[in-house]
Image (cartoon, rainbow over all chains, first blue to last red; front, side):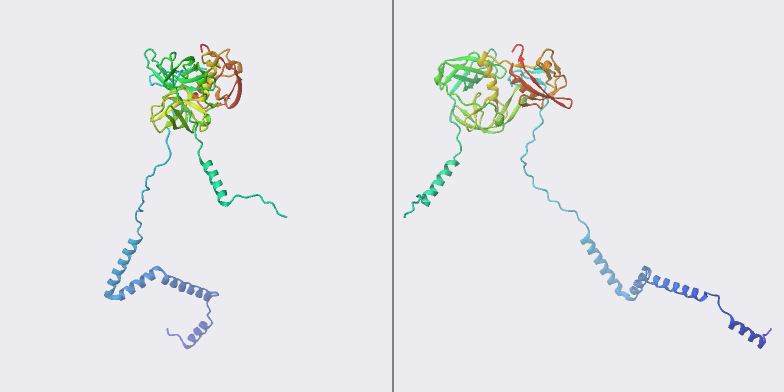
Length: 130
Length: 302
């Protein structure tokens, strides 16, 4: 059924009076700004940089192989220079020290009653009365 | 008016005087050149061998001291002055120290040397050995209390030479000419020797002058020779040690003015005990330091 002119007029009048709920526009703006910030952050991240890099590389054409070889050569050179090597230690020259090691005297075992120092001399062992 | 001035030496004379003064003071003190001329030989004892020694004048009138090596007959000395035999008499022989004291008839031939009372100050010193052929430099390098696990009855001085060791009996002199000790025998290692200190000669001489023999002092305590610590094992009843209150377990720290650190130190200190002469004995009983005064008695049979 085709609406009449009057019905259409009434409907338009109703639409003119229609208003969104309170806070609708505030929520809308807030959501809009949120999406905007998220897109900026996504563009400044590593993936964005990688994307930019491959995009740039793709645009180089055949010369990209020359750039790659140069980068590889520089990497090898730097790693060779910075790689830790075994420290060369110089052996100190040996020098005599003025110190004589005197062995501790053996514990006494015998008491000589006379000053007879021949090796065969026997002393008295054990308890000695003075 | 004319002022009188004291005459002053010219610059040349003044400098010459200073030079002479310094030159004289720079001359080292020379040891007294008293080459011992006394030599004594001892015939071999039964089963032994003959021995020779330098005889050194002691301070007492007409007395000489010599070393009688093991195996020699101490009762039959033959004394020589230069190469001339001299009549002599044996005053006494101590078998412990092997010192023999001789008396010569002609006291006018006796020129005594000054002796130190104790050699401790010269236990590590440069000395001069007066040999019959002249002075020889040597150096004392400390005390010897035991040889090869055998504790000596008295500590000896170790002496090093730059040349072969001189004869037994050779006196060791300070720069001032005082006798520090006399050579006993070679140590058997390089040019080293043992020497009897002056205090041991004094100790033996004192008794031999009185009675012809060394009389050892006796305290009546026992230690174990195979234990290095100077710890009293037993105190004999009715002994000076028992009378003073010493107990088994006491650890000796000094006897008289001699520090005791081990058994050999104690054995050396006991050699110098004089019967009837009080001696201070310091010891540790547990951790408590104690001090006693003991009067040694005459050792039985000695």
